[in-house]
Amino acid sequence: VIVETVQGEGGLNIARVEWLQALAELCRTRDILLIVDDVQMGCGRTGPFFSFEAAGIVPDIVTLSKSISGYGLPMALTLFRRELDVWTPGEYNGTFRGHNPAFVTATTALETYWDTELFSTDIADKGELIRSGLDEIADRYEGVSERGRGMAQGLKFADADRAGEVCRIAFDRGVLMETNQRTVRRGCQAASATDHLDRRSAGRLGRTGRFRCRHSRLIQRPDFRR
Ligand SMILES: Cc1ncc(COP(=O)(O)O)c(C=O)c1O
Image (cartoon, rainbow, N blue to C red; front, side, top):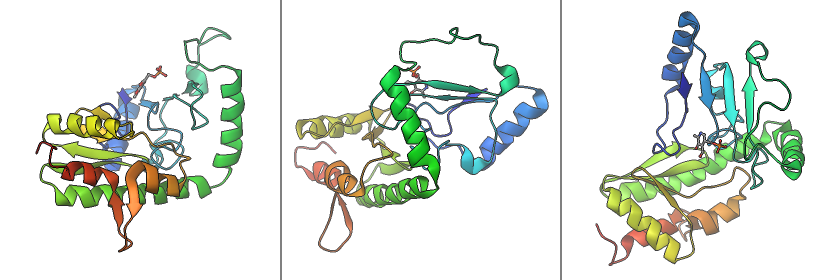
């Protein structure tokens, strides 16, 4: 069984902790390998290093990719329970398995960012900041709801065209966003600074101290199709 705990391209759908635990138990009793695809949601993007930590499950295989360092340089890892690892040296290969600088930055990130609980706590705090901004928009507009966890959050639109329109207008204004199904999201790095998130990714703190999201202003535009 291969599972994403939070679907990325699938529209930021979250698997419940109880569901993941039941799945892990099912796999264990039926002698099925449980593989967590943490390519998009691992390396702290949902808070903890592995996205499944809250469920307390131990998958047989975990895939990690994009960037292990958290910034740019592409690198992929596949973690196996030792007895399942049948690869011989050099056999496991791929286009983006990592080049030397990516190994160096990944090692440094693991040894520094992930040395204490601080980094994941910080991601959780930033996730709350993002959530409050997105919730505020979702409350204001019909057919819009907040999805996701940690840095992997976005807005789901009942009308898929509207999601595309938000992306298009954001692009015109220099903000790169993407649609996954009916969901719009901006890829935020786990290491994004809070003020960066606030000013450039999501918006700014208004006079009332409430989080105001730049995207809400997009939706308010008269030429924005409702
Ligand atoms: C959830 C998920 N799994 C796997 C992959 C493939 O990753 P890679 O290109 O590093 O093999 C992707 C790529 O976007 C992905 O989003």
